[in-house]
Length: 210
Image (cartoon, rainbow, N blue to C red; front, side, top):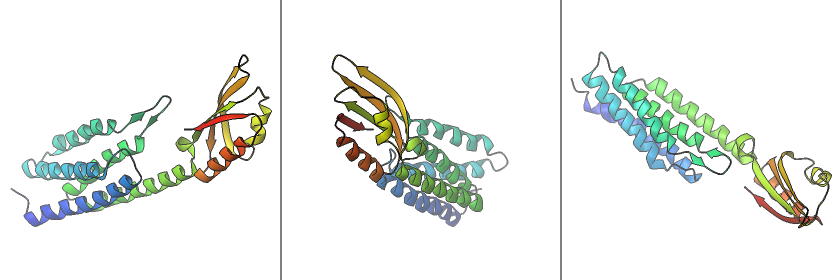
């Protein structure tokens, strides 16, 4: 038996507005996935969920399970691989969780769906804070090239007050220069201040922030 039209529109409307707001925020933050992806994934999951509970009300689990597994492949496409790390895990996971959100609303589990939606926002806010502070996975990598050979204690002096870790050091005796890679935690303003402080050093050659 087909579901009543007003009920279908209610569920699709909830999912559309919720995923649109979330997607626009992620879009404005210049994340790998645009707002349309969240809307399409959530609406698609909701529609398939409605179909599943309509045509197989006694056993919709096989159809519902295929939604979750299918979206996993889509989320994998959001990952961006650089030379030394993989980015986009939050975006990939958010696609998957919005498929779950759409599924929950589609089968009429409004409370569960909205709790999931609220938790997704909480995680994003925490993620934004960590990114703003360049903490954890959002640490910045500084590649510093010196104009002459210096003791490593010089770096310790400049980096005092910053949470940092030396990843590698390359010494070129022929050209009398060093290339040192640091992982540094700090806000954008703090990283900018550190870069300006490095420029004032008599041994400074160049610096790249990644």
